[in-house]
Structure formats: structure tokens, C-alpha cells
Length: 196
Image (cartoon, rainbow, N blue to C red; front, side, top):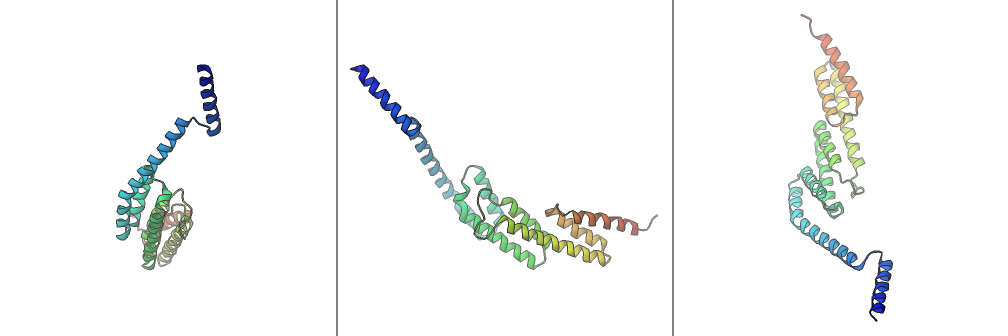
């Protein structure tokens, strides 16, 4: 009789394992781990969200994005912060518009570069704010600094032209035409200086 009970239990366990893919004990511990992970994330969000909201209210968009990225690096799921990411990125884009209106293209370009660097890696375009849109604005700032540099160069203000192009390269080093313009202008500037 013991052998029959033992054999029946063995067949039952083998059947359960084949149906679920994992032994029942392992499966229940995984569910427990997932539930605990979810509780930890909710607790983390409860303490973390007010900090983010406070930063957003103070228009500290880059700080809020840095803080979110830090929490994501510690294991928080990016998708649980979609609303906060959207508010921060929209606010950052709005602030960049203010800088452009004031023609602070260098400051705006640096700001936009930071927005791109802090853009969430695992989320699609957020409510009308994509990394591509941010890059387009950054390129606009680059273009404006290039134009200002050329205008200064044509006016004979060589050092001012170099300053505009150097400012451009700080946030957009791929603009090789700015490097070439600086090189050409620097040579001309050196040739204009009186020789001892």
C-alpha cells in the first residue's frame, strides 16, 4: 500500500510539473517575489514622486530628469514615471523656447543637449516630445550660432566669430564646418597681428 501511495504522489507531482513547467513551490515563490517587488516599487514611488513634483513646480526640469534617471538606474520601472517624464520634457522644451526667443542660442543648445541625454531610454515618444524633436531644436541653435559667426566674420570681428563657433561646438561637436571656420579665422587673425 505504501508503494502505491508513493507511486501515486510521484505521478501527481510529475503531472503538475509537466503542466506548469516549474515545481509548485518554485512557482509560488516567484509570485511572492513579484508581489514583493511591486510593493517595493509602490513604496519607492510614494517617497520619490513628491520630490519630482516639487522640482517640476519650481521649473527645475533637468534636476527632475536626473533624479528620475537615478531612480531608474536603481531599479524603478521607467513606465511608472511616464507622467513625470512627460511633464519634465514638455517643461524643458518650453524653457528652451524662452531661451530661443531671447536669442540665447548657446545656452539653449547646451540645455537641449542635456534634455536629449536624459531622455528615457525605454519609452517611446512621450506625448509629443520626442528625442528627434529636441535634436531638431538643438540643430536650429547650431545654425543660428553659425550664422551669427559668419555675420561677425564678414564684419571683420574675427574673435567674436570664433566665440560663436566655439560656443556651437560645445553642444554640437559634429558640426565640422564650425571647426573649419575657427581654423580659417584663427589663421587670418594671426596674420593680421603686427609682427615684432
